[in-house]
Image (cartoon, rainbow, N blue to C red):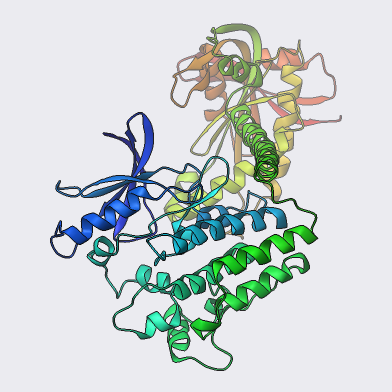
Length: 522
């Protein structure tokens, strides 16, 4: 026997499960934790033989046990759809009235067989003990073996144990030595019916106001009427609701038998026009499952499309769309040379002083507010935002999509718009002060390409980048400083008001003739 790496803990503290392979079929390993050493006496072996001989379509088979190893386990039939508790708690699976009746009949069929067998009762019936196989058939598990289960270590103060007592009949809760009975099984079945009808946990409405322990105290104390789950039931399930209430009668003798319940269910199904034929029931289940699966696939596909759209939009904000498309297809992005583009650089005058007067969080908020403002402005122009470093803001026009000789015009109009935006911008923590923007422009050739694989960046290289940065650093506050190549390109657009600054000494470049862009009449 070889266990896989997959783990599937159950709802019990004392029993947990793994999936393994036994004789070529998947099985569930239920781990056991005993309070004392288990005695392999004649009584225990007889119990185990009885349960090995049990074979019914609505009972999960027990293949064997390993009780002398460090990890003591029961080897049981594996039902891949989980438990009834899992199924009812999954909102993505739709359960109509027919499906609920079908689940109920499966449980009743299994309990009828158990009560008529040498085992005589289940003793631990709850929704977590009802396994669901591939055909959505309910198979009862964890029945029989009283010697083994009575020797399992249980923490009676744990919340898990207290929660499981909600399925226990009141007469057993009142007894110091709880003996499993058919009547107690019927009470547990009534609580399971409440779960099937409402798709909620036991005493769901009551636990909104009081604790589980307080509910159990009221159940044990008894009253008239007794403490039982209160739930709203659809009209089509009203007869099932009446069956449920009869199952949890305070007097054990007044509770019906499972044979009676089975007859009543068949009468109800007959009134609904249901044949009760096994093949018809199976086909209905598979059809409902297929419909659920189609809806689930459709919902997941829509979610995937939405998430893909969000991811692509985020990618397009980090990289140019044409570059991002190539990367998505797994293609290498070759560096590309552009003969003439116009680059914009700007920074905030006195930003170091402002930072010294602000907390780090205030600096982050300031830059975020500022760049959100700038980003909204540049969306109106044919430009590409390259990056922001601290208070520096870099934008280019003419790449990655070439736009002829319009790149200088677009950058110039954008620069004037940013100066207007900065005039009305206010800092949240220093509302009485204005920011002063210093802008530099230059036009020339560059090489552009993607650098890196983790957090790739679309970078520009060439002397044009350095010169544009020099135009910004040698400029003045609230002025747009530009080089002669940019001015010559703007001469083709007579709407701009340009003033000559003259020849200045530029670090690393020597003397350069530069200009101020003052306004535009367009």
